[in-house]
View: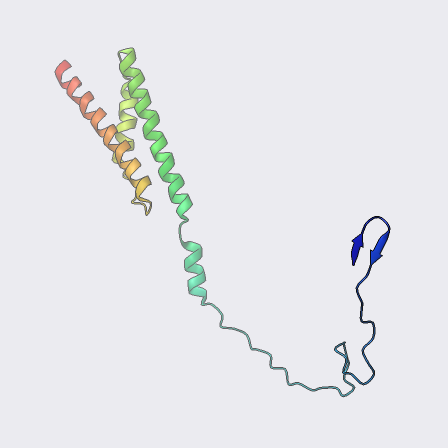
Length: 141
């Protein structure tokens, strides 16, 4: 359809009917019922119960990461307490004992190398601070 100006409309020729005797391309229903032998697949192989139980028993990697993050947070909090104690002039012995216990409790190795590296650096810093404080205790005693 083409519009020329506000008052003229021209339409292109539209073929309305197919000539008689020409095959139609429309929908047709066959009168003879067709009989197809439908093959239904049998049940697929069932996964072994052992493998399902094994997967359920595996530890989530997110759970391991959460434990590692909690351990790192605890060490950082204890190191902050040591820093605050150094600035105040006295570090509570309980804080040092907690730090020593937290450092000796070894965390597991993780598949994430970045997480492993951060935890190793935190533990190294804690070991260094404990060694410094032991040297100070030896000088004072």
